[in-house]
Length: 176
Length: 392
Image (cartoon, rainbow over all chains, first blue to last red; front, side, top):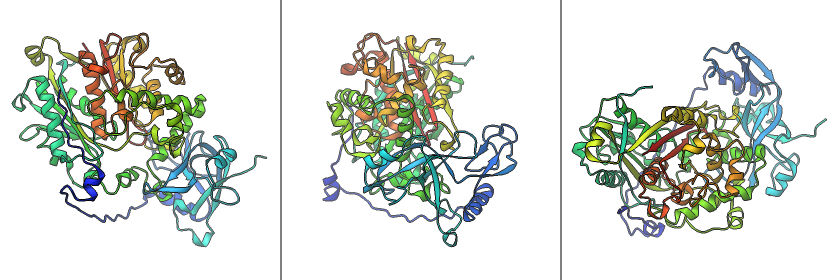
């Protein structure tokens, strides 16, 4: 069997040993937040986290939605949740959003929000409780683990704009 | 369940997997399709319908990329469809091809999977980031590695699996990949666990040698009805089972330690194939391995190991290519050992099972007797499972 394909090297491309055609696109979108998330983001402006409950299965879900994707029925109540929860899982990222390297890591996590049904998490970042920035992997692993209790740190109210980033990050808190 | 026609696989084709291919997507698709037709001993005139799978249009910068690729896939002037379920696409394309024929509507179907990721500059990462929720997730500065590292940590923590054990998947697959003629330059190799664990941290717990690379490449399979197949071959390889399932995109609301949707897809395929005990009746498996832990995660979802047991079996060599009592897993080398041109990578896994069952996998042929094998792919937001079972 003969397998075809002519593999190029980065060098061929950079030194223009091969022919290619360039195209640049600048795409721009503005998304309406919708019914459920508009209310959710209004809540964030006020420093509050809202979930939504399903009359059929009784789940309180976050992020909120106007219909339960499992029962396929409308959800019917807004439920005020706490701005704290527990780490369901986390990672320690040395890669930026554009795939470049970070010198110091950040910590994305799925955080199960207190007051929502079990297992209802949202994606957010976890910061060092005092100095915000994490030094390295070892420091992160010495301070947080799956199950660690965390609390939201909000932007000052006059800086909030009704976005998920109105919560700056979560920080680990001591258990009572 | 009764279907009007049984479906056979008559031929498979692959291009090399490359970091950057000179060929255009159309040229890659053509080369894979031509090779599959050649193995089947057919020409494009014998093909009644064509299915194409490829990634979101943004990777290529070509809107209606399916239509653009129709020429290279052999779809001109034919019933033609394009579908896409992320990384699950390569196997999903075979499922789409299967129902074209099982319905009794077509005698033959050419399934082509093509991916050229290198055109997206400087890196396809930007396109990948657009899979996250645009309201609640993307503003946090996401990258694609996040979801995998989050899922991997959850899996490792729930089952208390050491990083060194997960690294054994990369060790096995990168070594198997040395024997694959399509392997991308520089990714297969004989690595030690230490080298894998201590390679550059991407998103802990994921290190560089535990993640597959972006790639260019294509693959194709020729499918035919029982009536047609029996005219051209004495020894058809059959599609015995297919299954697929999609879970909710609210991925932060699910426990990521176990891929329930893969289990549902597997159960559908096992039921259709009449398989009661997959651990005895599946003789070789190609689970989707874009990340090292993913292979273990999927082996459990496929019910080939109990929850949390796949790593223990790995340590015992149960998934090795030369096992006599276990089930060889990713004998091709998988995505970690051959490369990951998304849709084409999934189809490569089906092609490997085809060649394994046919007994023509050469240096990669499993040591134990192979009468039946399973290929599985996975994709979207930790969301989709696609399964195909081939047998003699």
